[in-house]
Amino acid sequence: MSLENLKKTPLNAAHRELGGKMVDFGGWDMPVQYPGGVIEEHMRTRTRSALFDVSHMGEIWVEGPDAIPFVNKLTTNDVRNLVDGQAQYSALTNSSGGVVDDLLVHRFGPEKLLLVVNAATTDKDWDWVSTHKGDENVTLQNASPDYCQIAIQGPEAQSILQKLTETKLDAIKYYHFETGKVAGVESIIARTGYTGEDGFEVYAAPEFAVHLWNEMLETGNYGKDGGILPAGLAARNTLRLESGMSLYGHELSDTITPLEANLGWITKLQKGDFTGCDALKRQKEEGLNRRLVGFEMIDRGIGRDDHDVYVNDQKVGYVTSGSPAPFLKKNIGLAFLPVEFANIGQEIKIDVRGKHLSAAVVPTPFYKRAK
Amino acid sequence: MSKIPENLRYSKDHEWVLVDSDIATIGITDYAQNSLGDVVYIDMPRVGDTFGSHEAFGSVESVKAVSEIFTPLAGEITEVNDGLNDTPEAVNSDPYGKGWMIKLRMVKAGDADAMLSAEEYEEYLSANAE
Image (cartoon, rainbow over all chains, first blue to last red; front, side, top):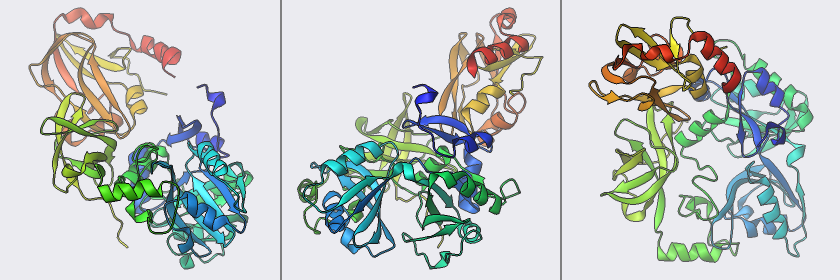
């Protein structure tokens, strides 16, 4: 794919000015890291604060009297449990129970929901949602081009963002949001994130992206010792992996069910019918064949994405995501294993370029921040 | 711009070589470490292992990627940089110094003469690698 065909966020030039190393990520020209490198960006997120451009994520508005029943019909979590100003992690499932995408559902009102979906799957999700609209009284809008999204994450995220808004951030609980002005710009301020740290995701019109980004960098003392850092996709991945969170296309896909991926907690089988409900109920009754587990390398070496997993010299599974964990200073990963081996302490071997290296099944999340 | 010391020889796989009589010290270039990002682990050969020229002698892993490392020269390993077990980041911070990887007794002492000079490597980078 040539560079000209890649989609760009409104912050593309800002990333280049900051020295971002740009890569093709699902058709988007995105920074994988900045000159400080992935380890520094990861550590700064855990200990101070970092800024992520996530404008490539997709936004879909669902509005109308049937907004809640419609989204409830398409997703695994129970939308009826949401109150105004609350967000929910959920999954769109197909009729076999496989995951079309994982997403956040935001309730703005009883007739107004915002779905935030993954960048690489935005078109697929839009097709899925719009073709599954029957006679429900809802209007759908793919609003992805109407928003930039900037995630400010880390223990200092709140104090930095508070200097830029009159909205009382302390009053926004985890997985809740408010609308308000940030640096003078009308925004959605959500206490959500993909790093395992406290932090906010700020949505605004794309023409204000550079202004918001620069204001947050400046207020966070970018360039000074211990100041905020822009962080790229590489750190975003290691942070979410340490926190045991799934990445679509790795831990989740059209042929992986939420039950297999340890997302039973967002799969409300008793809520009433939804796409894939029957298949998921059947899977639960019959029992899972495989389950996602965390592992930690025992031998030196790094089990990575798609490496095969062996038990007793038999190939039994594969690694979905594997990487060094910069904060924990261990080599960790997630893998699918048959349920009989999916137990804490189970020793496994990972085929790392022909060498069978020892690893052990461990609890997830690998990292949990102190409250 | 990548640092390219004048006194070394270079391969198109982005290894550098420092020759001292029949012993060649080998590491990866500034350009290579910069492309890889933060190095976290290096899989090294053992002293006494022998390799043909352009054979992979180990691998270097960053947070994001794995890359094989090739010896540009045929020979027998006489020393490996065990210090990199504890400080793999030396490959990033000092690729031509503390980040050296192996020393090898060359099969033919003159083999390194065929490798790229600093000037040629710089030309190669500007033509191909960017």
